[in-house]
Image 1 (cartoon, rainbow over the protein chains, first blue to last red):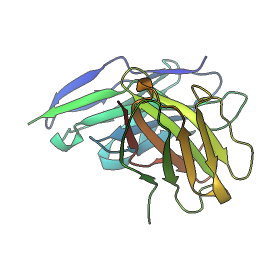
Image 2: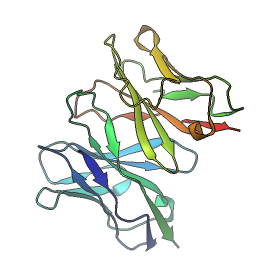
Image 3: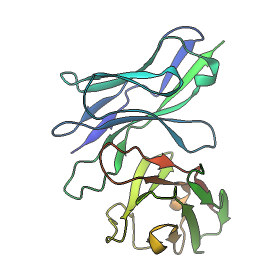
Length: 116
Length: 115
C-alpha cells in the first residue's frame, strides 16, 4: 500500500537557524511528491513538488526539498527559518493505484514552531 | 486570478440534518477533488471528478455522502443525516488535469460542526 510518513508531530527551531521537516514514503515505482503548508484556518498552499529530474527541488518562500530514492525520503528544508514559517506542513505522494485519479495521499502533518 | 472558493466557511448543524457544501474550482481546471481533514484521521480523499467522466467515489465513508459536479465546474458535497463523526474541515482542490505533474490548488475549506 502507498503511504507517507512524517515522523515528527512538531519541530521547534530558533529564528535564523536551518530547519528540516522529515518525510518518508512508500510507493511502487517512481514517486511524485509534494509539500504543502497550512496556516491557521486556511486551506493548503502548494510549496514544491518532485516529479523527475534534479533531486534538489526549490519552491516557494525559500523552501527546498531533497529527494533521496535510496532512503525513500523527501525532507523539506530551509536555510534560515522565519517566525512567519510557523505552520502545519504536509508531505504528500500522488496515488499510483489502478484508478489513476491523481489523488494525493498525505502524511499526518508536522507542526513547525519557529521561535524568535 | 481567483483561487478555489468554498462556501460556507463554517457550518454548524444538528445531528440528523442534511448539509450541502459548495466548491468553485479555478476556471479551466478539469480535475476536482474533495478531501476531509479531521483530528483523528488527518487528510483523507473523498471523491474525484475529471471533466465529464464518471467520478471516483472510492473515498466516500458511507452512503450518506454524495457529490455532484454540474457543467464540469461547480461541485456540491452533500452529507445526509449528519452524525457527530462527520465534524471536520472539508477541503476542495482543483488541478488543470489529473496528470502527475499538476499540483492541486486547495480552497480555504468548510468547517462542519455537528452537534
